[in-house]
Length: 311
Length: 244
Image 1: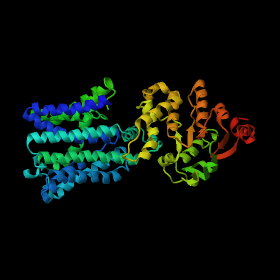
Image 2 (image 1 turned 120 degrees about the horizontal axis):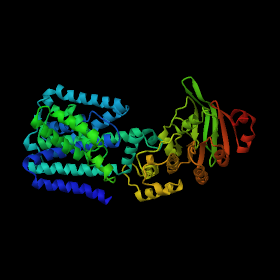
Image 3 (image 1 turned 45 degrees about the vertical axis):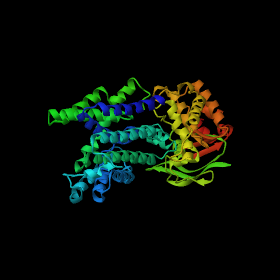
């Protein structure tokens, strides 16, 4: 128990230390990575722990992003209320879509979630005069602050991203180690057996989806506020696939895997796209190698070989 | 006092009638065995009782409460535990986790979604149940790494951990060695002190040793019901099942 908590607090401390030593470019990158990791942490809760593969999580990310960005722009709200509004949008969206999509399972669930998220994407394009569609909009600089702290400057932005990550990772750790987390894993392993132990699978899958949507919404809202831009590309299919890649890379069903995966995938794309416009080739090649060498992802393989105690 | 009571219970699968117009009563505290040839409808009957299968017609009541329309997971909360014929423990989880899952159900239901549960007490309970089924030294072994007989025992342990009023065991001794069967008989006799037990069993030694009453099924109907002695002496049963 203490070893596990120590590891996670240690990782947070390490990220705090990096704040003081990283060169500018990587400092900005890592702030982005931490916000996206929160997205992947939530995705893993649904995919890695509960065994539900969604292809529509961009909808929840975008709900957070647009919920925060549009409410701030329309009402002149600052970051605090904007974040809470975006977060709530994503939670409600996940609840509504969960009630419908969880009537399906397996491939149908993937298709239904994909469809809903495409509807979301097309909606952002259709209501172009409010959302500015593909082109997107910039959240005014003077609104991107909380308690008079300016979140648009590098230092505070990094620390805000780290704070969000820290809260998210500790909440996730608490969830997966709780009795509820145990039931989510049981549903992944054998849903019918779980029902016969007295648990309603639908209720727990809905819980997992809403929690996962909440993480995605928090990440989306923070992304908009910290980096200042809201656009339709964040609602596109690409942003549904990204957390899946992060999780596969880092380790399905591990708490810290999404961080490892997001760092690896972010830098892979970053470096590859500096070399060639066909950077997706490198992403594909990396995934093929991963499946061959370490099918459980980086941290998943480490857990299997050296550290079975990892949550 | 009658714990479980079924009236006019039928189940059709397409054209096949697996259970036909069955009336079934189970008094509290009894160990009851259901026997019958393959395809007699035994598993379907306990499937109907546990809620895994929805009846075509008929009603089921448990503790004088109509549970016909209650989904399976809520019947577990009422006190009906079912252990699977085909072993379906959580293969990738340790024995401890396999037992903790059913063991935490009651505490979780009592505490509510945000309540705290006593994890130490829960762990103690899991240890105790593992010891009872003879897996005390295997708490940290993954279920899939154990022999089939041990997985069967784990399955029974999961049923015990639910603290049920009615424990349904579907062919629990299948694949167990003779010494494991002897331990199993002791285990069930202990359980039966405060739990009603309904078991489907092919091993006649187990049936005759354990059951206070026996229900014999054939072609989806109840052919006979009585004490082991009565069943042994019954002509119809002899012809249908015990082979003359």
